Amino acid sequence: MCNGKNNPTGLLLAMVAGAALGTLVGLLVAPNSGKKTRKKIKEKTKELKGQAKHTYEEVADKVKAEYEQVSSSISETAGHVADKVSDEFDKYKDQISAKTAEETKAIKDAIKDQKEK
Image (cartoon, rainbow, N blue to C red):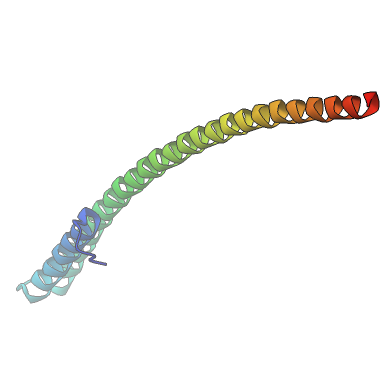
């Protein structure tokens, strides 16, 4: 998971997992009755579930924003590439048409010259 870059999502998940584990250990070794311990575990579970949901929503929002940015960038780049290709095609098409017209005229002139001889 760690690739040498800052990973805020991984850090956040590790913190939540650490908090959950620490809470669980603390509850289990605390001098409380079983009923009270189970109640505390249930409350902490609800709290951690809420934190996990919040973390998930933040990560999902980040991923969605990154996806939209990358998708937009790719679309924009593809548009520029398509425009460039189209422009180059038109340029070469015009050059080929002009050269073909020149060669056609030269051939017609050569045929005309041959007929006149």
